[in-house]
Amino acid sequence: MKKLLKTIIPALFGVFLIANGSVYAQNAAVTPSSSAPPSILAAPEVAATSYLLLDITANQILAAKNVDSPLEPASLTKLMTAYLVFDALKAKKIDLKQALPVSTRAWKMPGSRMFIDPTMQVPVEDLIKGMIVQSGNDATTALAEGVGGSVERFVQLMNEQAKVLGLKNTGYKNPEGLTEAGHTTTARDLSILATRLMADFPQYTSYYAIKKYRYQGTPTSNDSNRNLLLFRDPTVDGLKTGHTEAAGYCLIATAKREFAGLGAGNAAGSRRLLAIVLGTASENDRANEAQKLLNWGYTAFEAVKLFDAGQAVVTPKVWKGTENTVKLGRNEAIVVALPAGSAARLKTSISRADPLLAPLVKGQQAAVLKVSVGDQAMLDVPLLALDGVAQAGLMGRAWDALRLWIK
Image 1 (cartoon, rainbow, N blue to C red):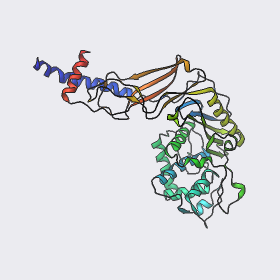
Image 2: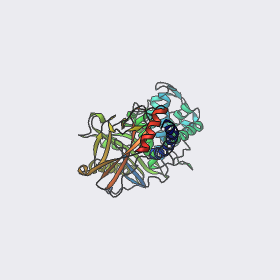
Image 3: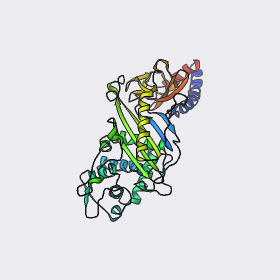
Image 4: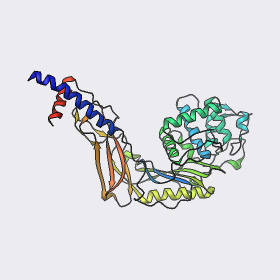
C-alpha cells in the first residue's frame, strides 16, 4: 500500500498543480466592469463631443459617449503636470516654499497666463495656484522646468507616468495643453488620471477648489477660477477647465455630496462623482452640461454599500496550504451604484477558481463579486485575499492532491 501511495501521490500532486493552477490563472485575469450597461438607464442629452460620468465611490461609469476617441485635452493636460509636481513634493524633491526662477520661455508662453516674468522668483505653491486657478501656461512651464530640468525632459516624464497609470490612448507633447500634433487623450484616460490624482495626493487637491487667486503685482482682473461650477454648486470642489479653438470648451468637474446609508466606513456617507465633458461650444455650456451629468448621476442612481472595508465577502476553502480557509474582500468598502428604487432586485454571486490552491499572497485577486439588478449585469468587483496563505509542505500538498482526486 505504501509503495502504491508513493507512486500515485506525486503524480496526482503534479496533475492537480498544473490543472488547477491554469484555472486560477484564468480567473485572476478577470477585471472590473468599466461601464454600466446602456439598457439600465438612458443618460440625458449632453451637448459635448465626448463625455463620461464616473461614480468614484462605486468605481462605476454611469454614462459615457465616445470615451475612447482621441481628442485634444487643452489645459486638462495640466492634471498630469500637477500629478508630477505633487509627486515631486511628496518625494521632497521640491518644497512648497521653494522659489523657482521664471525663464524667458515661461514668460513668453501664449494663452492663459499668471503674468509672471524673469525678474521674479516665484514660490512653488504660488506657481501651483497659478497653474490651477488661473490655468497659467507661464506658471506651468516654470513648474515643468523646475521639476524636470527642461520642458522636453518633463514631457518625457509625463508620457512615462501615463504608461504607469494605464493611460492607453494618451500622448503628451507639452505640459500646458496648447495644440500640437499628437497631443491627445480620451475621456476614459482623463477619468483614470483625475481619480488617481485625487487618491494619490489628497493633501494637495484642495487647490482645485480655490475660487480666486492672483500673485502679487499681477492684474486683479485675472484672479477667477474658470470652473463656473465652483461658484454655482457648493458640493463641487474641482477640478479643471480647458479650452483651445481645436479642443473646444472642456471641463472635469467633481462633486461630493452626503447620503445616508453609506456609513462611517465610507467617508461619513459621502458620495463622489466625476463628470467629464469635452468639445462643448462655450464656457457656460461646459458648466451646464457637466452640472446636468452630476445632478442626473446623484438622482438617477443610489449608492448601496454591500460590505465594509476589510470585511470578508466569502471565506472559501484553500487546498495545499498552511491554512484551510482564506477571507476574500476589499480593503475599502464595496459600494455599488444602482438605478434609484432597484435595490430590492439586487443580486450578487461569486465567481472563483474551485478548488482554490495555495500559495495566496495578501492582496492577490482570488474571486469576483458579480452584481446584477434582476437579470441585468451591473459590474464585477475583484475580491482580494485579505491575508496570505503559504503553501503547505510536500506531504500536506500530496495529501490534499489525493483528497481532491477522490473528491
